Image 1 (cartoon, rainbow, N blue to C red):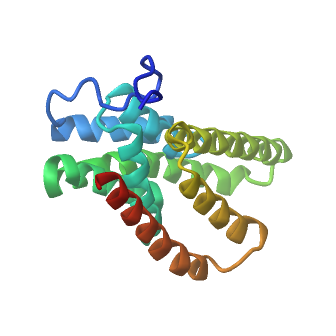
Image 2 (cartoon, rainbow, N blue to C red):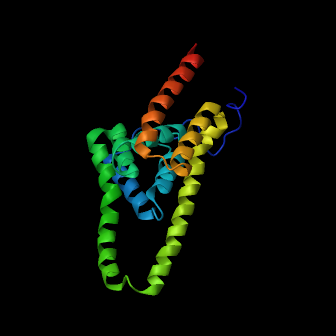
Image 3 (cartoon, rainbow, N blue to C red):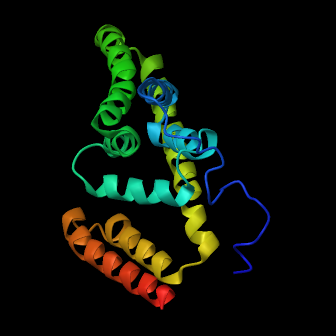
Length: 201
């Protein structure tokens, strides 16, 4: 379509540097850097590294993979590291990405926990942590808008309505997450199947 043939934007549809999957060491180091840079949450830095920096996934592929990981039990970014690493290098790749993601912050948090146990009641520290939490929320909102960009470019009205419906149900109406997912997951799968079948026809 005319919108698809627009000049190259910041969100490439096809990764420009897929010369082959990264090695195990590269996966470990990439996820270690994400975890060490991940102030306010690793998702922001994971998306930047995977989509923008290394071009290992397109923006759409990242959204789809993260959506799968979001519905699986456990921390979303940990699920993403396992799924992403396994997709590129099998089980060994999943273990390498998982280890790189968790090992550095685990060591750092162990040290910080010891320090906090001794100095956690200091008022200056408590106010600093409150300020950091505000910055974390800002980072999360920023990455949410970045992930929404591919959907907004395609202007899939049905997809946007589904997204808004889930947000309203959980964020505004405070409906139970499990109940909303039981309705939203099969509905979104069915809508996607019908849309792709219509395009194929």
